[in-house]
Amino acid sequence: MSDDLELEKSDFIRAQVKDDLAAGLNEGRVHTRFPPEPNGYLHVGHTKAILLNYGVAQEFGGKFNLRFDDTNPEKEETEYVDSIKADLRWLGADWEEREFYASDYFDTLYEWAVHLINNDKAFVCSLNDEEIRQYRGTVKEAGRPSPDRDRPAAESLDLFARMKNGEFKEGQYTLRAKIDMSHANMKMRDPLLYRIRKAHHHRTGDKWNIYPFYDFAHGQSDAIEGITHSLCTLEFEVNRPLYDWFIENLPVPYKPRQIEMARLNLTYTVMSKRKLLRLVQEGLVESWDDPRMPTISGLRRLGYTPESIKKFNGRIGVAKRDSTVDLDLLKWSIREELNQTADRVMAVLKPLKVVITNYPEDQVEEIEVANNPEDESAGTRLVPFSRELYIEQEDFREVANRKFFRLKLGGEVRFKNAYFIKCEEVIKDDEGNPIELRCTYDPATRGGDSPDGRKVKGTLHWVSAAHAIDAEVRLYDNLFREPFPEEGGDYIANLNPDSLEVVQAKLEPGLAGKEVGFRCQFMRQGYFCIDSKDSTPDKMVWNRTTTLKDRWAKLEAKTGGK
RNA sequence: UGGGGCGUCGUCAAGUGGUAAGACACGAGGUUUUGGUCCUCGCAUUCGCGGGUUCGAAUCCUGCCGCCCCAACCA
Image 1 (cartoon, chains in turn green, yellow):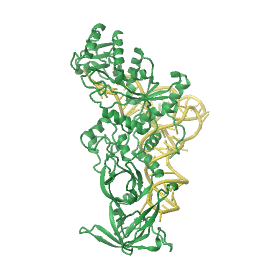
Image 2 (cartoon, chains in turn yellow, brown):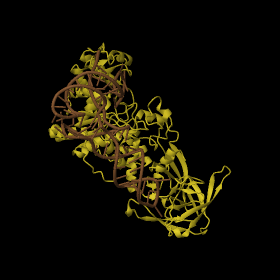
Image 3 (cartoon, protein in one colour):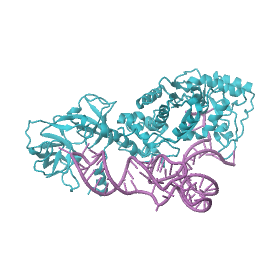
Image 4 (tube, rainbow, N blue to C red):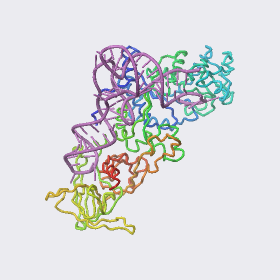
């Protein structure tokens, strides 16, 4: 698990920070921040930003702030700030006592807006949203100045104060910067600074009737906190000139610098809070932390560890080109860890009864099984073996070719660590489906080796029927069936109808009493963990974190089942 | 009147003038009481394309092509 003190992390951002330090910038400080808007749950994409920002601060002996970008009261809720904090803690990103909110700075921001008005760099505009859009021009045509652009500062000051006091309706006025309506960068065409919004804010309550926009809050918040490197995603590249304009034109205590990187995209998933919110609202998934969701809380519930997510992020790197990472890399990162650390247990997902006809009726043997072949120190345990057992339905075929190493009528296989078992008879239901196998065992093969040296090709996992624990197991698969669900139409249409299959499984008895969150490998099936929401001691619920690599399935698919 | 970014293997990604790292995926073998793990081998004569500079170019110059972002009172 720790082959990864690896080569020192290096990417263009860390290189830049290193250069800045070497050049003696920022008094030798490094100070980063993660600035989520509390309008939804965090997803894997955010882990890239969190781990980068926190990692850079750590690596250069700097500080890391958590700052909620809460300038839009209509979409923001305390539930979201709580979930965000829980996710950061779980990931191990420690903001110490520096938990801030853009709303902490509303008073300062208001003063700074007044400062701009006084310096003839902002004005109160009475255009409505439609007019503002028209006056702004297009990407290829210059815009036109608002008729209010030359409103005297005294008048703007008065109007702005009255906006704040709630004297006007929403939408009646805005405060805008006075920059350049013909600027090639649309963001510089007299951008909006404040809008009237008589909404209840999750922290400031009803104190404010006006709220600053992102552009007027973000860089200034960075400046107030003394952030040295303000890392964000590529789409904010066009906002940077505006970011710098405010820093230059306001009496800020510090001049931070914005650096942009590519956001994370993953195949077979969507990575936008808006799109994830729709899945939740329309009941297409159970909740934000549905194990199929790419949210941090969803992955946590699915069984991912913080380490695996860090490993994943270490592998994908940080760069500026738009990219979509293969979901397999994420799955690989958790298998990689769990292969080393998870105990192996036997659990039968889709049970088929096996009766060993020559095994004494009331006999029970305790079979010794290694807990983890990758880790001898994990020790061994005893598993009961008896006359009636369960095996996996898919481990039996009445007839099959020699590529099928498992049990067939008349064939012999090994039951893991127990005995060689031979299938003598199949009992079927009315539809012809096998419902019970009558088998014999070879007492001389106890432990799973034959003294006469004969070989069997297959080894099956099994569970003693009388001792088995019943449990619900949720077999999760990709949420979407297409690698690029957003391509061509509505992503909802690309939802994978088989993203969840629920089965009633039989588990080996040693699993009784395991705590919520417990992870292990169900031998030959995958990695599983006990669900943190729905599992109870009486009725366990398990989630499949991910399958094992399955070369047999691949072979079968290739040969078309022949 | 457009501006700003970005193009290196199927997918990520190193590389910063000295002759294409690594990972995932994929393929072929071997080991194996998990068709898992592990091990071995293979997988870019070429860096979006074309010119140029140079003894030497993915790296420099130049022309073209392609993709992404910006015209919310969202962030």
